[in-house]
Length: 392
Image (cartoon, rainbow, N blue to C red; front, side, top):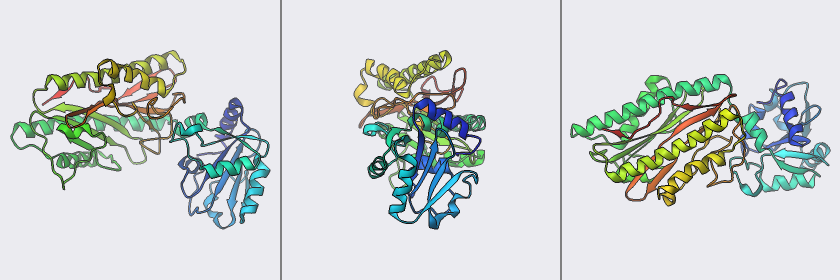
C-alpha cells in the first residue's frame, strides 16, 4: 500500500529509473497491482488514476460519485474529481503531458502478470501527451517484496505444508500396502482436513495425481471420477497453504507406491537435478550480490532436463512469483520459456522452483520448493526439502 512513509523510497526509485512518475490505473479490478497499491475501500466502478511524481505531491483522479473509496488516501495529497470523459481527459493531460510515466505495461506482452493496462488506456495516456514506460521494477520493489513478518509467516506455512505432504505420502503408501488403496480425491480431502487442524488454509484443493494422471500438470482429483492410488504407481502431491493473512508455502512431493521402475527413477532424477541446478544458481548469485533474473534460473533448470533427453516434456516455466496477496504473484517469475522474464530477483522477493516432466499417458513428475532472497543470500523452503523419491 502506498503511504506517506513509503513515498520517499518510491520517488527515489522513480528518479533512478529515469521516469517522471508512476501512473496507476484501475477499472473494476483490471489492475490488481494498482488496486493493491491504492488500497481503495468500497465501491469503485469508474476509472481511477493516481499519479505518483518523482518530485512533489501525489494526485488521485477520482470520479465524483465514488469519493468514499478514497478514505485511506492521505489528506495531504491532492485529489482531483471528474464526472465526464472530457473532464477526465483534461485532468489526465494536466498531470502527465510531456512526462515519461511508468505503468503496468509489458512491451509485447512479454510478462502477462505485469501487463495490466488495457491498450485503449495506453492510447489515452499517450494522446494526453505522455510517454509510457514499464513499471516492472517498481512492481517488484514496492508490490512484490515481502516484509520480515510475511517471510516469517511463509516459513511457518512451509513447515506445515512439508509435514502434511510427507504424512500424506506415508498414509497413501500404508493404504496401498494394506490392500485398501486411497482414492485421489479422498487423499486431497485428508490433506485439507490436516491443514485445518494445523491452522492454515488454501483457496482450493491440492493436486493428488496417481499413475498417468500425474502427467497432467493441472490435474484435479474428483469424486465423480474416482481413481485409486494403487501399488506400483507414481504419486504426485502438490499442496499449498497459508496462515490467516499470511503468505503461502507451495510444494510438490513425489513418491512411488512400491518399488520404482528404472523409468520412474530416471524421470525423478532429471526433475530433482534440474531443481537442484536452479537452487544452486539462486544460492550462488544471491550470496555474491550479482544481479540475476528469473529467466536465468529457468535456463539453469531447463539445461539439465534437456541434457537428460526430456526437453519436450518440460512444458511450463520453472517457477512463479509468490507475493503477499497471491500464490501466483506479480513479482519476477522463474521463466524464460513461457514469457520473457527479465526482472531482477531482489531482496524480499519469493518464488517457487518446480521443474516438471510430463509424458502423456505414461508418467509425470514435478519437484517443488520455494525460495526467497535476503540481503546477503537466499533461503530455500522447506529447509528439509525432498532429496530422494519417497518409496512406500
